[in-house]
Length: 211
Image 1 (cartoon, rainbow, N blue to C red):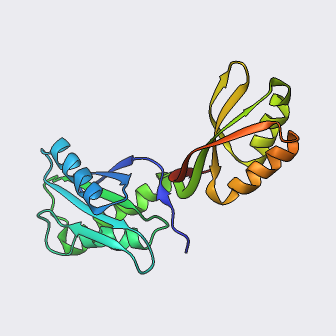
Image 2: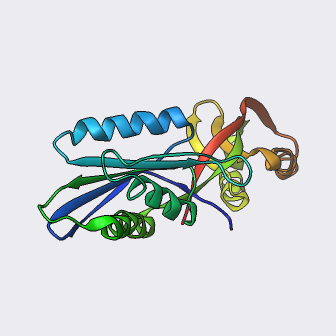
Image 3: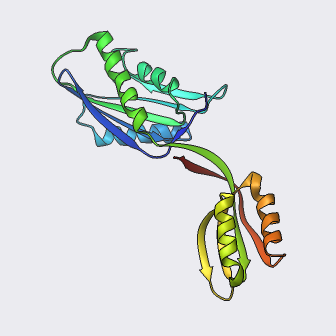
């Protein structure tokens, strides 16, 4: 199963037997990032009874993961969250389930169900993204080519990051690394060679929203 990366943070809350749960999830790319996020949430909700957490980074044979029950009975909170995350369509994700105890004990099975529920509720709310390797380039050309080049850039799937209109037009474009050669060749053909290219950065990891 293909795995996606959350595009941005998200949260959801729910109540089970008077205990309030607030689940916060975020994209992360290292275990250190995950731990920093967990610390941030624990500090923000220091009044909570528990801040249970889990994270998973990578996929296949190169997975880094971790979880914490944060005071709940061993195996009833962090592990169920991690299990649910592992079975989801996401990776490179950290999740903290903050609980304010409502006075009614949930029992072992109830806790497992309650903490798993948080994953099932937040996953549909997460925007999906993938990491793509891209290059950043400047293209410089005459004003007479502007409309044709803008049409081509959009059709090609490149992104115009910025533009400068002075003596000539200069567009800073983001292009998938694997397509840069074709991008350059087709623009040279389109303008009969009347275009300048300058590679600014190569092999940038860019998070792309999947709509």
